[in-house]
Structures are given as structure tokens and as C-alpha cells.
Length: 369
Figure 1 (cartoon, rainbow, N blue to C red):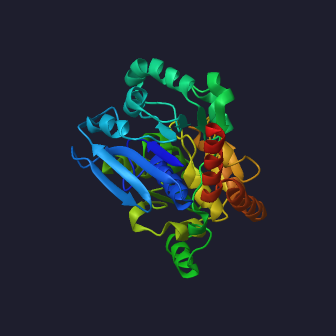
Figure 2 (figure 1 turned 60 degrees about the vertical axis):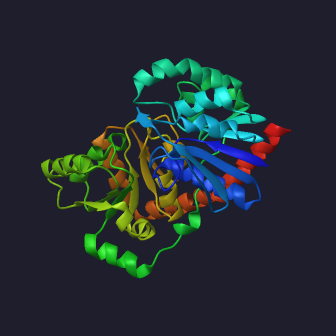
């Protein structure tokens, strides 16, 4: 099968959609399919073509980036030269959507609707009519959770053509860790230990976790990437809350993530905006056998982590509710263990990379038949 994936970026650019795209494309190529990924080149105006782990990656020369949307004059020519059986678009990428509508030559088109456009309201005003037309014309739409189909600004009219396929990751990376590393982390920071992993972005709600720590015995590890400006703001909040000595900031590239997942007692995802459409880091923690506390955003966060099954789900922007849920689980070791065991089983059944790739390929076959 000839498959063309269309998006704006691809690894080594870091991001949830980029990482998902790589896992999906490489999984399809490993099963013998002819897979091409068309993205833009963050390095500049030159178009580069490489084969990476069996995937042909075309990085069309990039002219500029406006409202998080890369623009590329070469993108249309590269797209016009492709004749895939399946064009798999990854949303949101308005420029890629427009170019595909004008130049695409695929037999069938599928859209992975990863997220609504949340912040770029000005862009959305102009793009919304095009987005509605593209969803109407698509042969199928993939959503990562049932809840997102229900609550999205654009998906409900197209619910009949939506197929829910959750994200999957390589679970084996997180199922075990070096016991000596785990013991060293717990000895260094003390217990109980609460963990967050992710970018220090506005929608992650870290200020609420930091404020919640004033009501929680123990330490919080915040592992992620972001600008020093955001980290400085969070450090100021920690100091004002009197927890600076118990909230520790680490840089993700410099740590062995599986060891930290296994060292923590509980994982927390305190996000506050719909920009958090799924929360893949929850799967990583669940694969390590950890219970999760997350927030209810009307997205996939509470589909991954199920309240009372794999952890607790609390309202967003509520430090007291967050602290209460964390304290409840940290006090009840038996409950914490049973939720963690259920979390591992759920990760294995629903969020394994092979399961995801097989589900997507099955949808391709159905769409082509």
C-alpha cells in the first residue's frame, strides 16, 4: 500500500504529533508498506529527501512560520508529484490542508484530527470554512478518544465517519528500569514523590500542582522542556507558596525517564486547557505501573486515565481538588497499588504502538475497499 502522511514537522522536531507520526509511519513501513512523509524543513528553504528507518521523508523548503503554521513554496510541487493510495493528513495544519485540497492526487483521504485550533483565533476565523469542507470531503476521520469527537468544535457533525484509534507508544521502554537508578532517585529527593513530565507550557497547569504541594507531604519532580521565562515564573510561584525546597525542576533530555517513572509514587497531569488533547505521558506512567491524577478537560485525558480505575480525575484550575486527590492516593498504599496495576493492564490493552498501527492499517483497507 502506498501511504502519504502530511503534516508540518517530523522528528527530530520534538512534539506529541511529531512523535506519533514517526511511530505510525515507521510501524507501517516495517509491515512492508511504501510510506512517505511530507513535512516542511525547519532548517530553511532547501528541500531535503531522506530515508529514515524505512520511511521516505520529504522536508520541503520552508519560507516562514506564521501563527505556528510553516509556509513552503515547494510543498505544493512535492505533493503534486505523489500518487498515494491513502493520503493521511494530520490536523491541525491549515497550510497543508489548503495545498492538499488544491494539489492532492490520492485515491482516498483520511484525516487524523489531533486537536482543535485553540489559541490562533484569528487564523481560525479565516480557516474554519475550509476546515469544514475538508472534514466533509474526507473519506474518514481518526480521533484519539470518544470524548474528543463529542466535544470538538468541528467533529460532531461528522461523528458518523469518525473512528476512534487511541495513540500508541512503545510500552517496553517504560515497563522496567534499573533498580539502582530508581533507588538513587528516591534517596536523592525523598518520598513520597509526585512526578510530572511534559513541556512547561501555559496549558499544563503546573502552577496549580505547585500550589497544591503546600498541602502535600513529599516532593514533586517536574521534568520537561520550555523557555527559561516559563520556568522562572514557576520557580517564583514555588517560592511564594513556600515549597521551593520540595519542587524540583529537571530538563527532560538529561534524565532517564523510565527510572523516574518507576521512582515516583504517583504521576500527575494538571493541564488546564483543551490544548491537552490526550496526554501521552499518562501512558508512559501507566506502562510503569503508576496511578495517575489528571484533570477533566472534555478531551482524551480522562479517557486515558479513568477515574476510579487507573487513578483520579479532578476539575482543572483547582489546586485544592488536586491536592485532595493526591493526598488520598498517597495515604492509601493498597489503593495506589491496585490502581497502578490496572493502569499497566489498560496501557497494554489499548495504548501499545503495534495495536495502534494495526488499527490504522485496518481502517486504510476498509477505506480502500
